Length: 259
Image 1 (cartoon, one colour):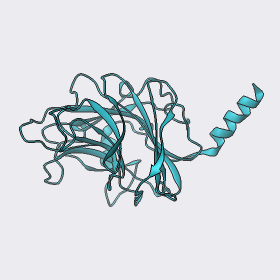
Image 2: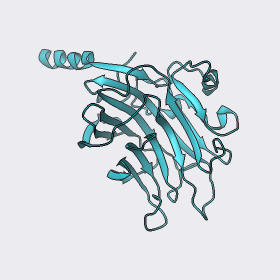
Image 3: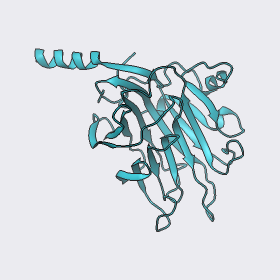
Image 4: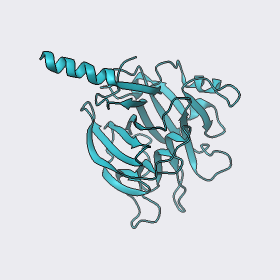
């Protein structure tokens, strides 16, 4: 028992949170409005969204986090509605980008988040959703019908490397999916850790070669939905919690280390 405890403490000690996006220091989503290019404060850059008030697209609540995540005080509900078009584009988008000078794009790092959907305002199975992606799309999650594939809908949540699916499961409502992208920017490899609910993360995709590239300000927490002819824009909600980036030993406990 003593050896096990010492080993566990050593693992915690060797893990380092490089950036913390767990919403613990935010009183409301309106705190995102404090950020600007001239005043880069808070954990997130907030500029990829529609023209309405922030509460239309981002809301915070303890009800929006994975209940197994005791390190997070609250989670975030991100919403796509009829106004969620950014900068004149025809894609609906709501995305938060880490505001940090930490080396989140160097060496081996782990990008953590938990995600969930509900039956109410469910994301469409007939539209492609790019979720928690890098600008170059070398790694990301996707949900729904992927542009160009056969059929009319796709119920799967997928882990993608360079637009190629490496893992998938049906995205059922009220099920929390816990994710860690294992990214080695030095060796150009990406792996995938996953669990559901309160279960600890396990590796389901061993590291494979990828064109890892990031400037440290191009990972998008949130969703970009591609348009599709003949399919209307419904209101869609996505829930996230336990968002942080670490180096060292991977934390498999849901929500990560406490502050």
